[in-house]
Length: 282
Ligand code: AMP
Ligand code: FE
Ligand code: FE
Ligand code: ZN
Image (cartoon, rainbow, N blue to C red; front, side):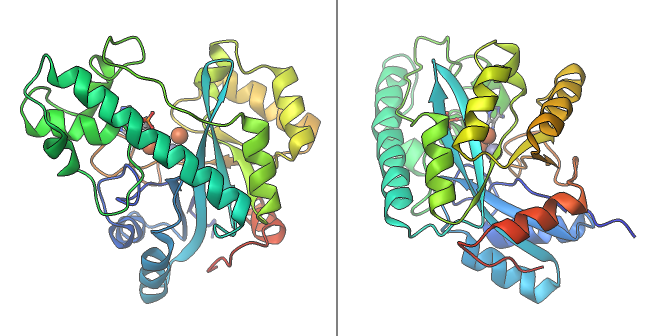
């Protein structure tokens, strides 16, 4: 039987709405055989997810997702099986997380001038120690009845073209890839579709990222359009990259359903064979 493998999900350790254990339960309910937890700049959900995976018998792959920036374009890099305590990686994750906090404060200040939204409203949406992002501001806007759901918040008030939007620090993608490799991890380019269509992520950039140590590319993801997927498959062949498929599940925060896209078993095997910074439960 074909294994059902979803390698990209988020929990309350970052901007998902389910706890790490609940994400694993959702994966079991969806009939998955293996699930990866890939919170933004955080590995704090791994322990609870792994424990739940052990209890339920599902496979678990620990991961992270790093925000990076290239010529203004937001590019995300997944890092499987990293050792999150490696000094350089831990330092960079801290830097991004600290910047996200400052940026959230700036956005809340701007929004609160025009809407009944306070710092406390947003804090109420953030789990202890979680990586803070616009989704938490979105959830506060929903709780206050200012917008109907997260997606509506992202479409207007939190959109990069909104007057309330503030950008935040992120390293360049080649640096993130090097940090993941140095921490024993396997770097995979997340949902490249949008950056690709914008023209800021190009074949030449991907070739540079391969030189930096990129191991794979997320092909089957709802944000990658069909022609982009075909092109990514071609690039993957050219550069010998692993190809993955994933849901990018955020619980109730996004329409993405867990298991809606899957990763071929051979890709998982390669990731597990290459990663040395953490143990998979397979
Ligand atoms: P930020 O990290 O602050 O730039 O916020 C962007 C993050 O919001 C991305 O990781 C998205 O996955 C996440 N997100 C969660 N829910 C939504 C949604 N409904 N629409 C758009 N982005 C979302
Ligand atoms: Fe997210
Ligand atoms: Fe992402
Ligand atoms: Zn994600």
